[in-house]
Length: 380
Image (cartoon, rainbow, N blue to C red):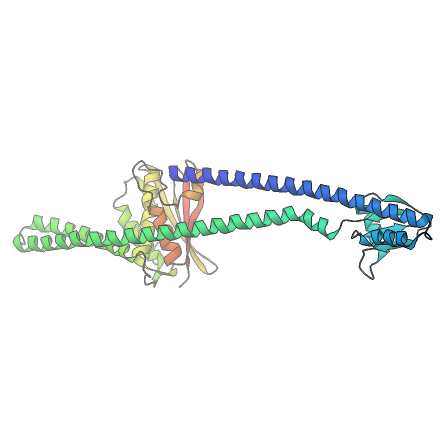
């Protein structure tokens, strides 16, 4: 459990760090933008001064006039000059621009006008393209940073999943390999007992039970060996397959636990599954349900169609799962048991999603009332 607490804590640290970076970036950019805005207003005031000089005496020395016009023409700020009777003159607007619309927009959205002189009684101006781009720069920074964080998260998640997959496959294959040797030895000893004690009915009864257990061990080894390889999927009646799982678990369940499963023969839902792996998933869910009920309660199963899928609900009347744990129940290592590895649901998720192209999730869970797990499989 500690590993998930640490992971959640690191996510909070990263989020806080990202917010600090964003705040510093926005504050700095806004400071620069404010300085640039002040500079542009100074330029407009210089523009007004030049126009005042021209209005007072436009017949002075040609060099003076040329300098004044150069000052005016050097401005890149879009300006509309309006005289006392409403005539307009514009500078740095696109050719063919509708000046009346531009003026109306500046009056409602632009900066306060600057008082001029003569044919430029009022000067309206708007931000240059540079200032506009700079004002949008914080948004661009935010988008880039979020994109970077998103790519980083996906990259780390992909790497983590890949590493987990390699661990699962290696562990499963090694487990199957290690089980093979003692199973073969047990089978040989059972054959020896048959030859040596074939006439002893009591011994043969024990041998029969041992053979059942060995068959079960072979099934477990076969399940582990299929992890990491592409299993063969067959069209199977899921009602009958659920019934097999129920019979197996019912023999090992307390007598005060009631099983309510669909009756075979009443309905038929055909799905493409690998029976040993599918049974493993259902048995894991049933085993968890038994643990959650502490020896008494009810386990029910329901099968129904849902568009292109067949859904299976497995419900228990156990202690339920806390809402803050619902997102981590399928993570490796998650367990609420004092003794447990926390691998059952993680393997179940891998089997259903990776090998059966389906989904498995917690449909609902209420503390002290029960939990419903749902498996969705494609129709055959």
